[in-house]
Image (tube, rainbow, N blue to C red; front, side):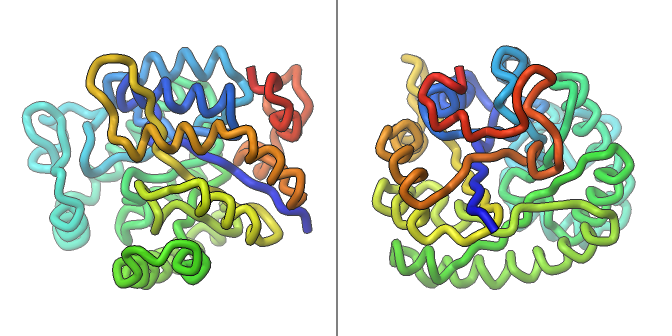
Amino acid sequence: MMKRLIVNGDDFGAAPENNAGILRSHREGILTSASLMVAEPGRDEAAAIARAYPRLDVGLHLVFCQGRSVLDPARLGTMVDASSSFTGNPIKAGLRYFFDRRLRQKIVDECRAQIEAHLDLIGYLNHIDGHLNVHVHPVIIEILTELAAEYGVPCVRLPRERVMTTIKLSRDGRTRKMAEAAVFRTLSLRARRLMARRGLKSADWLFGLHQSGNFTPAYMHGVLARLPRGTTEIYFHPAADLGGKRPREAALNEVRILTDPYLRDLLRRYGIELTTYRELAGGKTSADEPPTYAGALDPGAAQ
């Protein structure tokens, strides 16, 4: 088995700064895909970027916390406030979605609305993940896998990371990382069973869950050196400074990491091929391009 790598930018469409960071990381670096927040202020600009850069495989970043809904508040009731915003507290949201059965149909309706909004904006949908990985919530994943099969979406992210590899490379927050691993491994096991019943695919491995907001060049180099065979996704939250509201330093740093030319040397050294969920599902990057992302090792190929 070859080593294949999906490099994803989450929060596409959240704001112009996120869009700019993802675009630069794609054009000048190794980022191959992005996940779109379909109800946020930068969504139309993100859709225009997707049309201009067909090699960028744009999936859906499902939102049920710390973001806005597609549906009107009148249809969702207490799930959102008057401005269509979900609660910012992920624990509170998770407990409500699990215990309040009156919300089940509203969750179905909002999931469907986000999928359809994505298809209207982008025209295709090869992968779905979730803001704060909310998509593997026990209630949401059951609904989501059914809708993914209905709409022909082939891939869903499984947030199960090789936590000991991450801890070996970066020992900060070890207790937190172990707790996260226990929670998300359990959620991913159930998600994987539901996905298998419906023929949905995922990457074999993932990084980005435990080190989110704390990426360093050394950590990235270490992950690439230890990348397992098969397909791995590493997800980031890059953003660029456009002179307005300055993004978090961690987001700016991720752009610097992803555009570091040395990463291309490491990909060659370790025999790693860049890919996308579109290719994992068996599709091509566009009607006029070959079905391989290996050309992205050429600095001009992604432009």
